[in-house]
Length: 472
Image 1 (cartoon, rainbow, N blue to C red):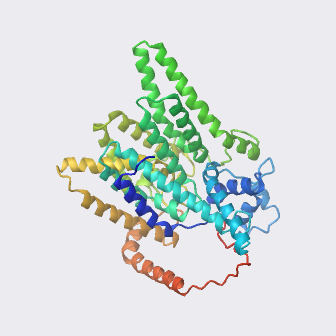
Image 2 (tube, rainbow, N blue to C red; image 1 turned 90 degrees about the vertical axis):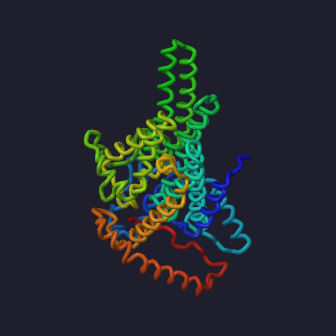
Image 3 (spheres, one colour; image 1 turned 135 degrees about the vertical axis):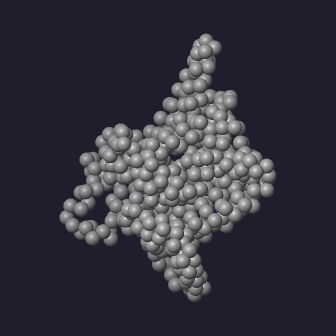
């Protein structure tokens, strides 16, 4: 059993205290991810009619003849271009929720709806995301702790957790794939780094399995495979220089194990695409890709750019450059991965991900940003020749966290447009002049409702409350 360090225990306690922030619902893109879990678990097929209905029933065009046809594929299925990976990860929690619902029905007569949309299943899905969110942070902190002091790794982990878009997609939108993707990438990078000096064939197999599930969950994660690819290229070059064919054969065998395992784990995605779209290679996305004109700078610094929306990540990027003093090869490959990710997202027609809180695509790289930010703080302590920057660093992280939470409040209350240009001058004004008073008023209203709340639902009544937000 792996022992937790004092900083890991502290992270766990802090994380558990935030559980009340979790919103157990399905919304937006989350409908597509959750539909795979619900349809396979309850219907044993890929009929997403109920999920489509839940998402579009309030659309004014819903009653128009032929409206549904716009969402049907050539195979007669409701389109669903989202990935099946989240459903795989949620399955243990949804199965547990099903058991709880069955027991509750028999013992209390609660009659929870058995369609996957009643309270136990929404709670199971959200708790699953919450669990994987903690693991994402834990593995990120452990990865960073291999290169910087654990206190810097801990502070960096808290910063990426609370001062970036990670927060929003952990608590407010748990049905999206981003937190789950961050977990798988963190696990992959941690295992890759931990075993890269002398990896056994079993470890290559495990790494391949994680890679396959990582791609099942979020396609852009393919760029994280640059990490083991770089290792293999350097190893192959070394073997050629030393004229060691046996090393080349061994390397080829290990890469074959990795690739075949990743492909086998990726099979669920291929099968679902074949069923839904008639082709194993059809993603279902209709947006175009512009490989020769990427919106590289817009992805970074526009009003929906990753660094303009989440400025603390600039320090993380700078920290990755400082990392070259500890491990030059690691610094180069991580920076290359981040830049490749920016380029890739910049080629996508919908690079801004609207409506989106920040540039949510980059949540997948949280583990890399944790190491970068930890390296940045470590470098500052060396430059100033003092170890007493922990308190100033914590205070700075608190300021970024308050900014992030204020930004979330403005986003969900539509104080600025979720699509189109954002006026950062207006946002900054609202953060100081509006958010504190409005946030306090909202908190007072919530506490008042809780204080006056009296259960009115009889045990025999249906408790399938509204937990699915309409199409947005």
